Image 1: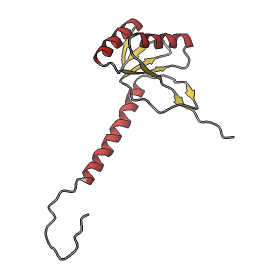
Image 2: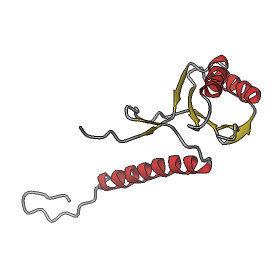
Image 3: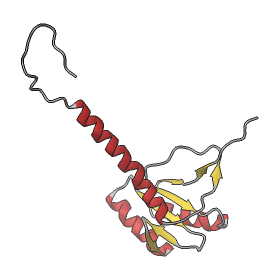
Image 4: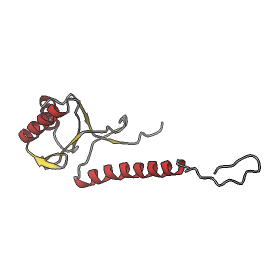
Length: 139
């Protein structure tokens, strides 16, 4: 709210943009939170839990490896060979491509390592394994 000192009865003709910016930022935050929830709800994976989990990574490409041993790249079901070729093509367009691998906790360690190996061989240098944070019991 604008206030003027003195006896000026002039009409305030300036636009106060601060409330508009506040509303836009709130809408942006709501959009960001709901978009990640929608993507995670699309493919069900039981992630392993870790107490020392870091913050979430903003990923360029998401890989989901289900307990049925199905591989999804950004929501599209692919074989390991096709996924590697698709990632290699995307690395040519964007050399700083990041990947987040979400693998079901019931999968054998070796199969998850094969997916990680496929990601690295396709040229993706930065990747992360998606986990859920578990609570640490107080001592």
